[in-house]
Image 1 (spheres, rainbow, N blue to C red):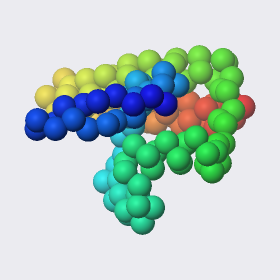
Image 2 (cartoon, one colour):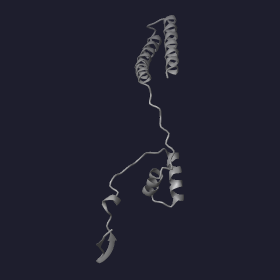
Image 3 (cartoon, helix red, strand yellow):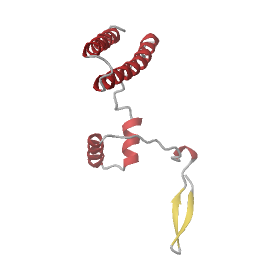
Length: 133
C-alpha cells in the first residue's frame, strides 16, 4: 500500500491508501425483530467488533449454518393461489349472509344452511391443502 498525505487541522498526516480490492463499496443491510436485535447487539458487544466488522466476520467466515429451503411444488403454489382467491369470495359471502340475516332479509333456516355449507367448504379446502406435497 502506498501512503497519502492528508491535511488535518493544518498538519499533514500520513494515511495508507486502500487498494481497489480493500475498498468497501457495497452496502448490505437487514432487519431484525426487537428480540433478535438485542441478541445481535449483545453478541456484537462481546466480540469487540464494530457492527460492520461483526457482520462481515459472521457472514464471510462461514460459521453460519445455512439450511436451504426446499422449493415448493408448482401445483401446491397454484392450489394456494386458488384457495386464497376462493377464501376471499367465501368471506364476502359470509359477510353478506350475516348482514342479510341481521336485517331480516333471509330466514333463520337459510342463514344456518349457508353457514353450514361455508364451514364444509372451509374444512374441505383445509384438508386439500394439508394433503398436497
